[in-house]
Amino acid sequence: MELKDTIKMMTSRDYQVRFKAEYFQNVIRYQKLKEMLGKWDNGELTFNPVCPRSTYEMQIRAMTDYIAVLEARAVMEGIELPEEQSCLPGA
Image 1 (cartoon, rainbow, N blue to C red):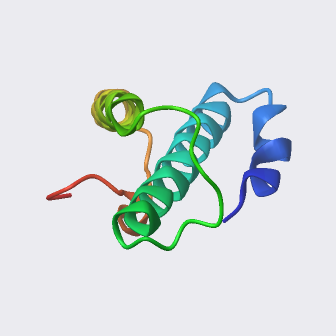
Image 2 (cartoon, rainbow, N blue to C red):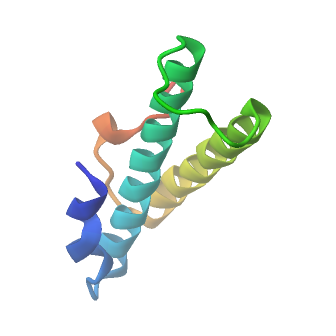
């Protein structure tokens, strides 16, 4: 799934569909950032990051926390998320 695949979901009248779109968007962004950090670690980046590594680390931690909150809410609200979509360590 790509971000563009969530556009229709974001405009749904059903809050559960919009919730899933928000979750998927965050997971996609998390995965892309994690991939970039992996390339950074392996010296494979094709650009020079502007921010220090610590800034990206703070961002990925915040994203991990936010995804965890969305997953907890989904359980509490009875919103089914595909298990293979989870990106959190140990998930």
